[in-house]
Length: 132
Image 1 (tube, rainbow, N blue to C red):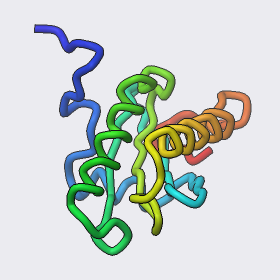
Image 2: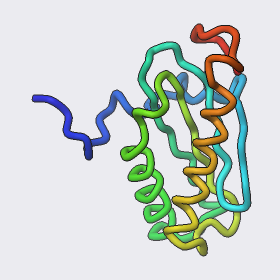
Image 3: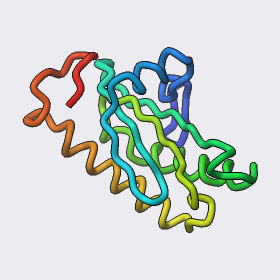
Image 4: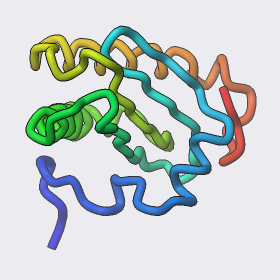
């Protein structure tokens, strides 16, 4: 059974503590008032997403779930643009009050910045330990 474009299979997620440690070790970092995105080339050719939405920054569970749902949907629609990147998205204070459109715009802006930083011309090595 093949994955549908709207699915979010395990192969597209950061699952283990080791996966998160790998990104936190030497990340590319972009941030704004709503989100911080950490990314690192993984050498697999597949983009993967991890979410770190803390209670400290987004108090209510309903708001955390809303933010995660919006971010997963944004990733699903554009994950093919990010071959070989592991990304962790962290919410900042005030993220819960942001509109859906503002969160999507913020996330897409971060993705564009990461694409520019990790373009083949700006990243001399493309191995799994490369940090653009």
